[in-house]
Image (tube, rainbow, N blue to C red; front, side):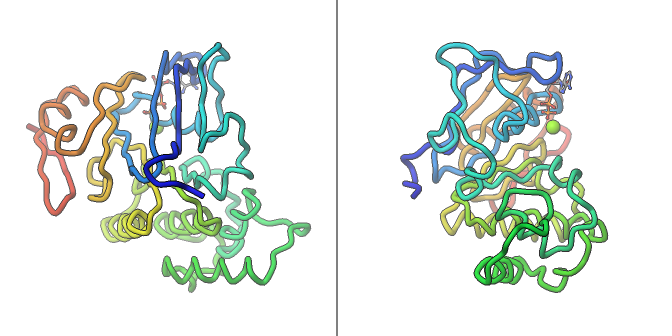
Length: 265
Ligand SMILES: Nc1ncnc2c1ncn2[C@@H]1O[C@H](COP(=O)(O)OP(=O)(O)O)[C@@H](O)[C@H]1O
Ligand SMILES: [Mg+2]
Protein backbone atom coordinates (compact mmCIF):
# COMPACT_ATOMS: atom_id res chain seq x y z
CA UNK A 1 0.00 0.00 0.00
CA UNK A 2 1.10 3.54 -0.66
CA UNK A 3 1.72 5.79 2.33
CA UNK A 4 0.99 9.23 0.90
CA UNK A 5 3.71 11.73 1.68
CA UNK A 6 6.18 9.08 2.84
CA UNK A 7 6.94 6.70 0.02
CA UNK A 8 8.91 7.80 -3.04
CA UNK A 9 7.20 7.09 -6.34
CA UNK A 10 10.42 7.78 -8.21
CA UNK A 11 13.91 8.18 -6.80
CA UNK A 12 16.67 8.92 -9.30
CA UNK A 13 20.09 9.53 -7.84
CA UNK A 14 23.39 10.51 -9.47
CA UNK A 15 22.46 9.14 -12.88
CA UNK A 16 24.28 9.51 -16.19
CA UNK A 17 22.13 8.55 -19.19
CA UNK A 18 22.39 8.68 -22.97
CA UNK A 19 19.78 8.95 -25.70
CA UNK A 20 21.57 7.50 -28.71
CA UNK A 21 24.96 9.23 -28.77
CA UNK A 22 23.87 12.26 -26.71
CA UNK A 23 24.72 12.33 -23.01
CA UNK A 24 21.44 13.83 -21.76
CA UNK A 25 21.88 13.47 -17.98
CA UNK A 26 25.00 13.76 -15.81
CA UNK A 27 24.74 13.32 -12.04
CA UNK A 28 20.99 13.71 -12.39
CA UNK A 29 18.82 13.32 -9.28
CA UNK A 30 15.07 13.67 -8.80
CA UNK A 31 12.71 12.38 -6.12
CA UNK A 32 8.91 12.51 -6.34
CA UNK A 33 7.05 11.51 -3.19
CA UNK A 34 3.69 9.77 -3.23
CA UNK A 35 0.94 12.32 -2.77
CA UNK A 36 2.85 15.19 -4.36
CA UNK A 37 1.68 15.48 -7.95
CA UNK A 38 4.42 17.02 -10.06
CA UNK A 39 4.92 18.52 -13.51
CA UNK A 40 8.34 18.41 -15.14
CA UNK A 41 8.45 21.35 -17.50
CA UNK A 42 11.15 21.85 -20.09
CA UNK A 43 11.74 23.07 -23.65
CA UNK A 44 12.37 20.81 -26.63
CA UNK A 45 15.55 18.81 -26.18
CA UNK A 46 15.69 19.30 -22.38
CA UNK A 47 15.48 15.55 -21.71
CA UNK A 48 11.77 14.92 -21.04
CA UNK A 49 11.46 11.90 -23.32
CA UNK A 50 14.79 10.54 -22.08
CA UNK A 51 13.47 10.77 -18.53
CA UNK A 52 10.30 8.87 -19.53
CA UNK A 53 12.45 6.19 -21.17
CA UNK A 54 14.60 5.82 -18.06
CA UNK A 55 11.47 5.26 -15.98
CA UNK A 56 9.90 2.81 -18.44
CA UNK A 57 13.19 0.86 -18.78
CA UNK A 58 13.47 1.68 -22.49
CA UNK A 59 16.97 2.94 -21.68
CA UNK A 60 19.26 2.26 -18.72
CA UNK A 61 21.61 4.58 -16.85
CA UNK A 62 25.36 4.16 -17.23
CA UNK A 63 26.41 1.61 -14.60
CA UNK A 64 28.31 3.51 -11.91
CA UNK A 65 28.64 2.83 -8.19
CA UNK A 66 26.20 4.71 -5.97
CA UNK A 67 23.67 5.73 -8.60
CA UNK A 68 20.15 4.37 -8.83
CA UNK A 69 16.76 4.65 -10.49
CA UNK A 70 14.09 3.35 -8.12
CA UNK A 71 10.35 3.15 -8.56
CA UNK A 72 8.41 2.65 -5.33
CA UNK A 73 11.69 1.63 -3.73
CA UNK A 74 12.48 -1.07 -6.30
CA UNK A 75 15.84 -1.07 -8.09
CA UNK A 76 14.72 -3.67 -10.60
CA UNK A 77 11.26 -3.88 -12.00
CA UNK A 78 9.46 -4.94 -15.09
CA UNK A 79 6.35 -3.43 -16.59
CA UNK A 80 4.30 -6.38 -15.35
CA UNK A 81 5.26 -5.93 -11.68
CA UNK A 82 4.95 -2.20 -12.01
CA UNK A 83 1.51 -1.98 -13.54
CA UNK A 84 -0.45 -1.97 -10.27
CA UNK A 85 1.78 0.76 -8.81
CA UNK A 86 2.61 3.09 -11.70
CA UNK A 87 0.70 3.54 -14.95
CA UNK A 88 2.91 4.91 -17.74
CA UNK A 89 1.10 6.63 -20.60
CA UNK A 90 3.32 7.78 -23.44
CA UNK A 91 3.06 8.67 -27.09
CA UNK A 92 5.35 5.81 -28.02
CA UNK A 93 2.79 3.44 -26.63
CA UNK A 94 0.08 5.18 -28.59
CA UNK A 95 1.99 4.95 -31.86
CA UNK A 96 3.12 1.37 -31.44
CA UNK A 97 -0.27 0.17 -30.48
CA UNK A 98 -1.86 -2.41 -32.72
CA UNK A 99 -4.30 -0.42 -34.74
CA UNK A 100 -6.61 -3.39 -35.16
CA UNK A 101 -7.21 -3.94 -31.43
CA UNK A 102 -10.79 -3.34 -30.28
CA UNK A 103 -11.34 -0.77 -27.55
CA UNK A 104 -12.19 -3.34 -24.89
CA UNK A 105 -9.02 -5.31 -25.72
CA UNK A 106 -6.90 -2.17 -25.48
CA UNK A 107 -8.09 -1.85 -21.88
CA UNK A 108 -7.82 -5.55 -21.01
CA UNK A 109 -4.27 -5.64 -22.39
CA UNK A 110 -3.29 -3.48 -19.41
CA UNK A 111 -3.90 -6.43 -17.11
CA UNK A 112 -1.05 -8.29 -18.77
CA UNK A 113 0.92 -5.10 -19.50
CA UNK A 114 0.93 -6.32 -23.08
CA UNK A 115 -0.02 -4.99 -26.46
CA UNK A 116 -3.50 -6.21 -27.45
CA UNK A 117 -4.82 -9.51 -26.11
CA UNK A 118 -4.00 -12.98 -27.32
CA UNK A 119 -5.87 -16.25 -27.41
CA UNK A 120 -3.92 -17.70 -24.50
CA UNK A 121 -4.70 -14.85 -22.12
CA UNK A 122 -7.58 -15.54 -19.82
CA UNK A 123 -9.81 -12.78 -18.62
CA UNK A 124 -12.06 -13.47 -15.67
CA UNK A 125 -15.56 -12.10 -15.24
CA UNK A 126 -14.00 -9.75 -12.72
CA UNK A 127 -11.51 -8.43 -15.32
CA UNK A 128 -14.37 -7.76 -17.72
CA UNK A 129 -16.35 -6.01 -14.99
CA UNK A 130 -13.35 -3.82 -14.19
CA UNK A 131 -12.97 -2.92 -17.86
CA UNK A 132 -16.67 -2.01 -18.05
CA UNK A 133 -16.38 0.11 -14.91
CA UNK A 134 -13.35 2.02 -16.22
CA UNK A 135 -15.09 2.61 -19.57
CA UNK A 136 -18.19 3.90 -17.81
CA UNK A 137 -16.03 6.14 -15.63
CA UNK A 138 -14.28 7.68 -18.63
CA UNK A 139 -17.43 7.78 -20.79
CA UNK A 140 -16.05 5.57 -23.59
CA UNK A 141 -18.30 2.53 -23.30
CA UNK A 142 -19.96 3.21 -26.66
CA UNK A 143 -16.61 2.66 -28.40
CA UNK A 144 -15.73 -0.68 -26.82
CA UNK A 145 -15.93 -2.59 -30.11
CA UNK A 146 -14.31 0.09 -32.27
CA UNK A 147 -10.80 -0.64 -33.62
CA UNK A 148 -8.20 1.55 -31.94
CA UNK A 149 -6.97 2.75 -35.36
CA UNK A 150 -10.48 3.99 -36.18
CA UNK A 151 -10.72 6.22 -33.09
CA UNK A 152 -9.91 9.93 -32.90
CA UNK A 153 -6.73 10.97 -31.09
CA UNK A 154 -8.80 12.05 -28.07
CA UNK A 155 -10.64 8.73 -27.96
CA UNK A 156 -7.38 6.80 -28.28
CA UNK A 157 -5.89 8.83 -25.45
CA UNK A 158 -8.83 7.96 -23.20
CA UNK A 159 -8.55 4.26 -24.01
CA UNK A 160 -4.85 4.35 -23.12
CA UNK A 161 -5.73 6.06 -19.84
CA UNK A 162 -8.33 3.34 -19.22
CA UNK A 163 -5.66 0.71 -20.00
CA UNK A 164 -3.53 2.10 -17.19
CA UNK A 165 -6.47 2.59 -14.81
CA UNK A 166 -7.74 -0.99 -15.02
CA UNK A 167 -4.87 -1.91 -12.67
CA UNK A 168 -5.85 0.89 -10.27
CA UNK A 169 -2.25 2.13 -9.93
CA UNK A 170 -1.21 4.47 -7.12
CA UNK A 171 0.54 6.82 -9.54
CA UNK A 172 0.38 7.86 -13.20
CA UNK A 173 3.23 9.11 -15.37
CA UNK A 174 2.17 10.95 -18.53
CA UNK A 175 4.12 12.39 -21.46
CA UNK A 176 2.50 15.57 -22.86
CA UNK A 177 -0.97 14.15 -22.28
CA UNK A 178 -2.98 16.66 -24.32
CA UNK A 179 -0.75 17.08 -27.38
CA UNK A 180 -2.90 16.72 -30.48
CA UNK A 181 -6.21 17.09 -28.64
CA UNK A 182 -8.73 19.83 -29.39
CA UNK A 183 -9.96 22.11 -26.59
CA UNK A 184 -12.90 19.94 -25.61
CA UNK A 185 -10.81 16.77 -25.52
CA UNK A 186 -7.98 18.59 -23.72
CA UNK A 187 -10.11 19.88 -20.88
CA UNK A 188 -12.12 16.69 -20.66
CA UNK A 189 -8.88 14.73 -20.29
CA UNK A 190 -7.50 17.19 -17.75
CA UNK A 191 -10.75 16.95 -15.75
CA UNK A 192 -10.20 13.21 -15.56
CA UNK A 193 -6.63 13.68 -14.32
CA UNK A 194 -7.94 16.13 -11.74
CA UNK A 195 -10.43 13.57 -10.48
CA UNK A 196 -7.63 10.99 -10.16
CA UNK A 197 -5.55 13.40 -8.08
CA UNK A 198 -8.50 14.22 -5.86
CA UNK A 199 -9.07 10.49 -5.30
CA UNK A 200 -5.51 10.20 -4.00
CA UNK A 201 -3.45 9.18 -7.03
CA UNK A 202 -0.11 10.85 -7.63
CA UNK A 203 0.15 12.30 -11.14
CA UNK A 204 3.49 13.09 -12.76
CA UNK A 205 3.60 14.66 -16.16
CA UNK A 206 6.39 15.82 -18.43
CA UNK A 207 5.51 18.63 -20.77
CA UNK A 208 6.42 21.88 -22.47
CA UNK A 209 2.78 23.08 -22.40
CA UNK A 210 1.82 25.24 -19.45
CA UNK A 211 -1.89 24.88 -20.10
CA UNK A 212 -1.88 21.15 -19.46
CA UNK A 213 -0.72 21.52 -15.86
CA UNK A 214 -3.93 21.14 -13.84
CA UNK A 215 -4.51 23.26 -10.71
CA UNK A 216 -4.06 20.21 -8.41
CA UNK A 217 -0.41 19.84 -9.45
CA UNK A 218 1.57 21.52 -6.69
CA UNK A 219 5.18 20.99 -7.58
CA UNK A 220 6.94 22.17 -10.72
CA UNK A 221 10.39 20.94 -11.75
CA UNK A 222 12.07 23.01 -14.47
CA UNK A 223 14.32 20.99 -16.78
CA UNK A 224 16.83 22.54 -19.17
CA UNK A 225 19.62 20.78 -21.06
CA UNK A 226 19.31 17.74 -18.81
CA UNK A 227 19.62 19.73 -15.58
CA UNK A 228 17.06 20.77 -12.99
CA UNK A 229 17.15 24.57 -13.01
CA UNK A 230 14.19 25.12 -10.71
CA UNK A 231 12.09 23.09 -8.30
CA UNK A 232 9.31 24.44 -6.13
CA UNK A 233 5.66 25.35 -5.96
CA UNK A 234 3.73 26.87 -8.83
CA UNK A 235 3.74 30.45 -7.70
CA UNK A 236 7.53 30.39 -7.37
CA UNK A 237 8.30 28.49 -10.58
CA UNK A 238 5.70 29.70 -13.07
CA UNK A 239 6.69 33.36 -13.24
CA UNK A 240 7.37 35.44 -16.33
CA UNK A 241 11.05 35.65 -15.35
CA UNK A 242 11.70 31.95 -14.74
CA UNK A 243 9.81 30.87 -17.86
CA UNK A 244 11.50 33.48 -20.09
CA UNK A 245 14.82 32.11 -18.92
CA UNK A 246 13.72 28.47 -19.27
CA UNK A 247 12.52 28.91 -22.86
CA UNK A 248 15.07 31.61 -23.84
CA UNK A 249 12.28 33.89 -25.02
CA UNK A 250 10.56 36.87 -23.37
CA UNK A 251 7.30 35.48 -21.98
CA UNK A 252 4.45 36.74 -19.87
CA UNK A 253 2.45 34.42 -17.64
CA UNK A 254 -1.32 34.64 -17.36
CA UNK A 255 -3.27 32.70 -14.74
CA UNK A 256 -7.00 32.00 -14.55
CA UNK A 257 -8.75 29.62 -12.11
CA UNK A 258 -5.55 27.81 -11.20
CA UNK A 259 -4.54 27.28 -14.84
CA UNK A 260 -1.52 28.96 -16.36
CA UNK A 261 -0.85 30.13 -19.90
CA UNK A 262 1.94 32.10 -21.54
CA UNK A 263 2.02 34.87 -24.10
CA UNK A 264 4.98 36.57 -25.77
CA UNK A 265 6.34 39.14 -23.29
N1 LIG B 1 18.46 8.77 -30.67
C1 LIG B 1 19.17 9.86 -30.35
N2 LIG B 1 20.43 10.04 -30.79
C2 LIG B 1 21.15 11.12 -30.44
N3 LIG B 1 20.68 12.12 -29.69
C3 LIG B 1 19.41 12.02 -29.23
C4 LIG B 1 18.59 10.89 -29.53
N4 LIG B 1 17.39 11.07 -28.93
C5 LIG B 1 17.45 12.26 -28.29
N5 LIG B 1 18.66 12.84 -28.47
C6 LIG B 1 19.10 14.14 -27.93
O1 LIG B 1 18.95 14.10 -26.52
C7 LIG B 1 18.52 15.36 -26.02
C8 LIG B 1 17.27 15.18 -25.17
O2 LIG B 1 16.22 14.73 -26.00
P1 LIG B 1 14.75 14.39 -25.47
O3 LIG B 1 14.86 13.61 -24.22
O4 LIG B 1 14.01 13.79 -26.60
O5 LIG B 1 14.20 15.86 -25.14
P2 LIG B 1 12.68 16.40 -25.01
O6 LIG B 1 11.77 15.21 -24.92
O7 LIG B 1 12.69 17.24 -23.79
O8 LIG B 1 12.42 17.22 -26.23
C9 LIG B 1 18.34 16.27 -27.23
O9 LIG B 1 19.49 17.04 -27.36
C10 LIG B 1 18.22 15.30 -28.39
O10 LIG B 1 18.71 15.86 -29.58
MG1 LIG C 1 10.04 14.72 -25.98
